[in-house]
Image (cartoon, chains in turn brown, yellow):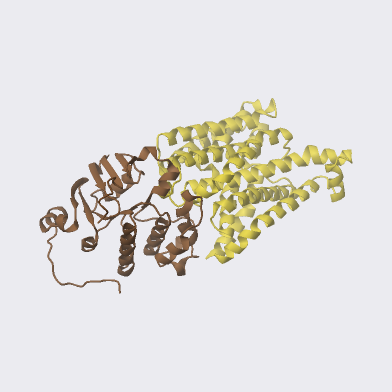
Length: 243
Length: 326
């Protein structure tokens, strides 16, 4: 858990409303936490992340207490990093060059690029053109680009969706590390079995906020049944961990 | 990729050298062949007869060709980054069709015969009317697809205007022929007046130059670029205005030269990779060299319209390059 001295929330969203997608959603996330955003398809997870990232109008957003509209565009690139659910690369930039774009807001100083490439297991792909990568590889390139921004706030839209289980677990470990260093990581995800590894859960349903809290408090059997329409049970099934 | 990186260092010097050689040759070749010493004497004005040919006839034509080539290929590069599509061209939003409509009207109404200024200025006005329509549309927050569709509609509309005047004046052979030639583009009889009219190209090119890096980010996605710190709305507005100025000025003095803006940036990207910081200067120089070379071919084969030659040379080369890429 974050230090109790951290009184200013890392991300606050008040009354986020995008017609037809989300309706007056308000959340306040503390610094230094790893937070999951869950909800069925079409519940508004991506929309909320885009509003929080300042990419969609529709609500009052504050980063570390500062209203978003007061933060200059370039500065926003240093303060928060958003990663889309998927991307189509039209041009054949090399993996290294795309990862390097994460340093745009820092005058392209090239810092941390090699580390991020290694961290996301992209060493063997570093010189490959990004328009010839698989979906999971593209996702890792985007995450590496996000990592080099060293932002205090990460907003990742389904970062695990296209990844194999090993890379997915590695990304969760990475996110945990970022949170440990004081950053706030908000990521949407579908695999509710992974949610237990997170500090907090924000649950959306049909464009509205349903619950926030610790995973065990939010993901009750009753909740899973009413929001996701599934029966939950705990059984000793297959458990996968990094070696 | 390593091949691209190796090529990247060489491409600009090679293109510059090609431009210089082609420029010298195009000063020497024409109805009257000037051997190189004569060209030199003309340039230094030590030989009045050669000086007239070089400074009054060939130099303005050469400068117009350089400006037009640089403008069209850099405008094409900008549009391709803007639309995140390597098939975008400067004419996508109707700017060149607008220029064509303006020019054809000025010929049809007989203004073009009044002064050398009338035709290019009408073309410029046509192009800017088209730009104003697109900008008004973009201001309403149109999406990329919306802009492309608006461009399609505008192209059709302005093409219809051009077609109407072309049909109306089939009985006046002179005007009709003038329209047809203008629509195919060319560099014949260009003067220093045309150079002056094309001069905004230099200014626009200077403004485009530093935008290479943010163009990299934009070309991989608007929202992504914005999240990395690019002021996307401002950048897109700048790019739209600059590419329109480049295209409008080029169209005003050269007619509708097709293909350059599509093919030159594409070829350069295949050669040195997609980084715009390197592509922008190269597209200015490479585009200039391409059009100067094509204009040279026009003269050597006896007055073919430039638009035909750019397509005849560019097309097969492009196909060959695509084939080799696989």
